[in-house]
Image (cartoon, rainbow, N blue to C red; front, side, top):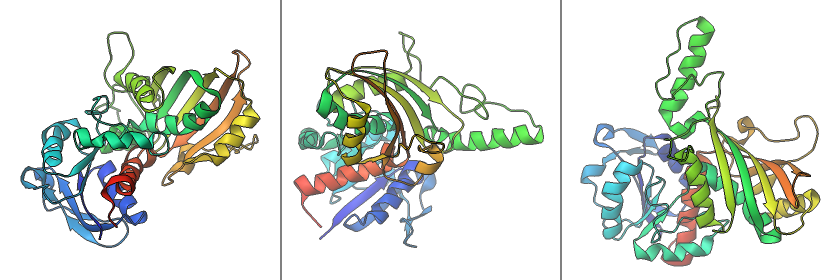
Length: 341
């Protein structure tokens, strides 16, 4: 016997990817519902590459009673209105928005990092999926933290336009084409031209001069991994369609060499170490697309601090940063609590 799973926001980038991942990983579904806004009602969505087409149901009229799991990829607005209704109906909600991440009664889960925290889902029948840039970061940090205890992290992100949704990807394409043919370039989704440029600004600015994206990385890493870790982030949007990259500098309490770190990362769940120290011996966003792994390259010692390391981390933000992590949470939930399939 399998699960009844609803994917809310099924027509968006992450919702479609959730459908793909559910099918690829052969998640035990007896029934899958594609749920979306009223304007998408009746739109057909393919369930992975199975050839099976699902017609989108209107979220305003969807009854979550009798459904086991709802994967929400519809943003904070619909999550605020409909996730509590689904949870009250007995359906466990796994939400990809930022709305519930810092709620003390809602576990924030990366299965390779803090699987035991999922037991707290019963407080509200809600589980939060972390920010895409946080998810790949903590997968890489966790095994090193276990080995040598992390004191401080400095991270600079290079985040793709898909992190801003389909409109972000469309803007990169349209601006790139406009530049090649000599048409004027007008920013709409982003604050400045994104084609052939980088923008050190993701989400809104806060009073201290940081952006909300940078704040998310700080507080989510503390909640998922260890509240004692100090972290500072600079988050940058780059002209890449899919795949987030991060330059990560780590200071440890205990001694750890680059060689030891690489040995640890080779065996770490969810991590793929690719570090050949030669031309092309590292992973870039182009190579990570469609892959489940968090890739780590360019691991080296930082001689400017005691017990310091630097590394390069790349992952498909639509996968590990969103859809894949949500499905992995559903798998973990099934193994530990729901026990079907």
